[in-house]
Amino acid sequence: MKTFNITSLCKKSLLLMLLFSSCSLLLGQSINYTASTDIIANPERGLQKYSITSSDYATTTNYNNLSVQTLNNWKTSTDKVTVVYRYFLLDAFLNSDINATFLENIQTDFNNVRTAGLKIIIRFSYSNAQGNTAQQPTKSQILTHISQLSTILNTNKDVIFSLQAGFIGTWGEWYYTNSTEFGTDGTISEIQWANRKEIIDAMLAATPIEIPVQVRYAGIKTKMYGNVQLNEQAAYQNTAKARIGFYNDAFLNDYGDQGTYDVSSQCANPVGTTDYNYISNETKYLPMTGETNGLNTCNNGARTNGTNAINELNLTNWTTLNRDYYTPFWTQIINSDHYDEIVKNLGYRFVLNSSTITSNNSDFDLTLNISNVGYARPFKERNVYLILKNTLTDEITTALINTDIRTWESSVSISQNFNLGLTGTFQLYLWMPDKETALESNADYSIQFANTNTWELETGYNNLLQTISLSSTLNVDDFLFNNNFSMYPNPGSDIITIKLKKSDIAEIEIFDVNGQLIKEFLVSDNYKLDISNLSNGVYFIRLDKNTLLSHKFIKL
Image 1 (spheres, helix red, strand yellow):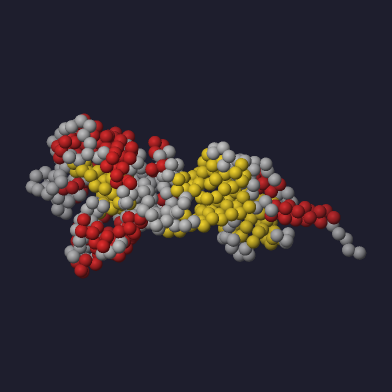
Image 2: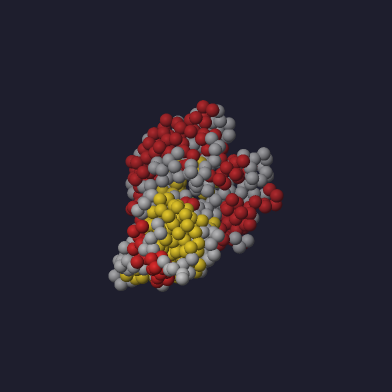
């Protein structure tokens, strides 16, 4: 006679009941999105518009040649401009401090830019033309000017895109200086380099970490701060190397973009040189901006044709490019049908490909698949939120998504579990507002995905076109999961992480949908479980051989 173990049978039956009953609790839904071909007015990227202060700026109170109307016209134009380049000409202060009128007018500029919903690149220079006269004040006077500007720069850090290292040389480009303190025309002694570094160090000290400082050519940064390249660990820190980016005011011109890159001859192609590779790496983490200033005639103008322009914009991670100069270059780009592609892809351009929600009634997993098809990554920190809007009350719940958009390059996949204790039906959105509190609620400063039928202009939300129903009443599966352990991502394809809530070490068993034991092992908190060798389907995890402590997961 065969003997049956009644206790064992009961336990197995109870386990199977739990496993199969919980299958019906898993609710999944996926949405695929359509990419947009529109030019989008997203913050901190795209074409930049040029503006320069006039002589009246230093003498006339409330003088304004950068009006809100002008800024709004740029933003609503077909180019959707969100960045203005402001060139502050300090020629009236070669031998004196900056006066109160000039400083007050700077503040007016910032106020107007903020009202219009744009950001501003700023450069200070003392000379707008070459000549035999002094192109800047003494070093001590420049340092005094930087100190004077510190308060206004810190006060307005929310709308400042970057501070360019002007102050020295014609146009503030650090080349033609006529100066024994700073050197000139590329002839610079060690003492003169030390004087130049003192200016950069003062600029870094006068501005908060949120504001990068941009220099004109690769050798400025490598000479002063070494040629060790940034990486993901060194980037975004409050160090000189992590804060100094680049502007190139001779994009695609001869002589290595007229000094941006060190090359051997007028027509040498800088692509692939040490300087070019250095800037290509640094601008993964920092802004690259500037303009063209002529048509390169070398090799029949091969570098300035539209196809190569797009290639090099991508290679060196361009964020903004001056639309107002050089006109023949832009005419060539328009005639070759490359214009729209450049305008759309300067900086970042995020496309939402799909979203998947898997719900267990009280909590849910969200998986996002995103592409960045732009030339660059965002260089400023920005939170990404999931917004849940109650469809009955319109009440908003905000949940932070664990990601850093400064790392969004090419293909991006995000999976996260949300257990918010909510009850009701909710419309889901993604929201990427400005990090600064003063701008967070302003939709002009929120990022729009390049998709059709998802953008909400008034709120700055991206509609995921997903609704979810949640219940705070826990079923057996929810209770077990929430009070003992959790796992993510779920569904998963390769690795899922198990987090323990009540013990340091636990025994884990994996069962298939038939209740067949597949695998058993010991785990500790934050255990990485490799499920890549499992067949696609539904599985269940049991904790410490307790039939009441089980949870399902899906292998994709």
